[in-house]
Image (cartoon, rainbow, N blue to C red):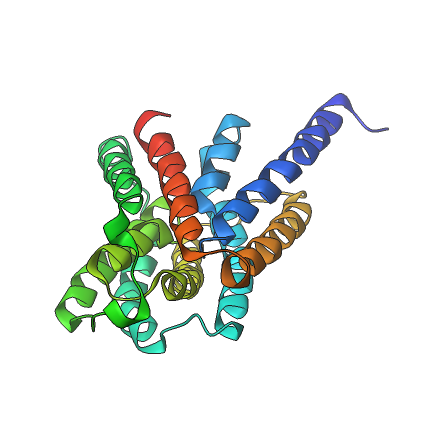
Length: 254
């Protein structure tokens, strides 16, 4: 006989499906995996903190993998920029994923930084066209890539919420190419962070995970299609500002 606890858990899992779908759809339009949205959704649902980080990383892998494929097929990609970011970020993402630190001290700071980045995204000067792109210096990639990799592994996000505004602010890629690089960057960092987590703990036994993975896959596919082909760059920046504002508010105040 099915008990009330099972039914309550099943109902919660079903309620999270549309929330995960919507989060993946919104974030994938700007090349992101949606981890900060998944973390917020799971926190509001009262899930155990020990489950949230690995689940967010796994769902991130699904959406970022789809986004990487879609943006690369659309020609929105810079292999050199991604390769150098990956070289410096992946080892630190693995290290960050292996750590379990109290986050009360850095969450507000990161949240304020993301809110500032959201505000900057709305500036007309943020519209970077192909003719305005500058070659990224190796030293800048090394410092920023390492920092973003560590933060992504430590917090359970893929790093795209840090990479996209940085690349656009510095003019290292056009708006649409930034989304493609961010998708691949998130995929690699999420895999590294997940590997780091598995080095010290086991994955949570969550029966609803395949259902949630299907939900984010559908949302991620639709969002990546819209972002890579069917939406103007100015709207990508506006959506990115919304994503950053949501993530920043969640980190700083929730």
